[in-house]
Length: 356
Image (cartoon, rainbow, N blue to C red; front, side):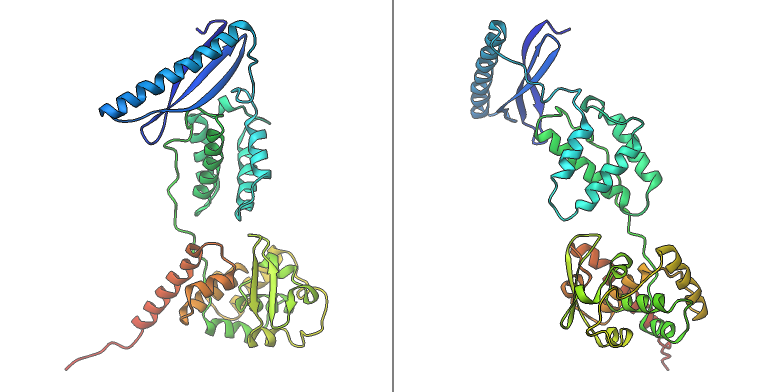
């Protein structure tokens, strides 16, 4: 049991094998950790042993200074790193100050973690390996594809950020991970199948035009639904900030887009007055059956079809990535793999050669 007032020199193991030195200061129920920016180096050489001895003596001198201040009553305990501080408040501050492109994911992870908790708040000392393992299982049970791995990875980034600011002495997430699964591949439409859809009637003309538009622009439903002639059509291009990523994408107005949007010049307002996503997909389902296409097609398949067809016809990977507004080429490579698979299937359908 700790005394009423103590200053203890402790070691924090580092991934490198070195040890970081810090002071554990306790006084009348209050605790403070002071990190000395001194390291005990890994190794047994004479040079390292001498260096470590000097470091240890320096750390002891600092410890003695703090102890004297504590005894004299001149040292005031800071509570910034108290273990009972709110982790959720820290997470919220981290989220609100996040400036990288995947901000949407950080917001999503915060929401998922708060939903997982059985209480309105949680302190740092409650963020244990057991709790994080339960969070891992929660993600695997409730989410599919790459989402569990992505969410846990972003959550662990928050933990590491807190460790750098000395809120944790040990990483509670160490050894806890989720194997990244291959993304669930949506069905894609070939150019011939897209032509079949164009030739068949859809229950909603606006849904038909919007879906075909996405087959030749790659825009998601959420962006197509808010697309405006007077705001996003810039000369020979369409420019829009994507809702999902927050990044701008520029799409050339192709001849196919011009065919779908007859007399689009000088028009104003919404391009497509679409119903809800659920109603739109219901119309697409009936339309695909009417065209006798034996695939499960949703609105998002239009974007997948666009990316895959661009790759199938030999377009450059970077060009495809820019047209789709991807922030990572790994996302684009999915379409390349699908296109390569389609090419292999096409080759295998060629008549078998018989040699005599």
